[in-house]
Length: 109
Image (cartoon, rainbow, N blue to C red):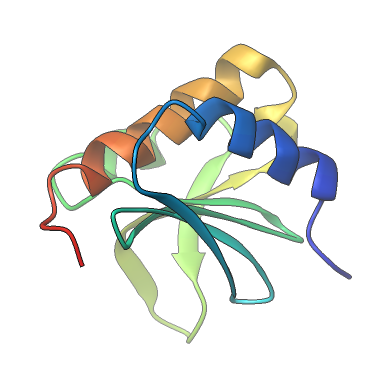
């Protein structure tokens, strides 16, 4: 199953005001990059969000958020938000902004 194109369009709109926005197909989904650093990726399972190590535990405690595990080991600093947690524009924007804020702390690639 492919990623949700409608969700990708909503994410694209949410990030449109950021400079250095690009997209790349990764992990069977569509990754959104800011200055070359991934901030989030829409997949068939939901939205991978890069929150960083400092915000990781708080992000995991939020409704519909869980471990991001691609290899059998959770990816520290990343969470997977289930599609149910992205239904409203406000909820989606909150998660996308969390990813964008962390990506902004990284040097451009």
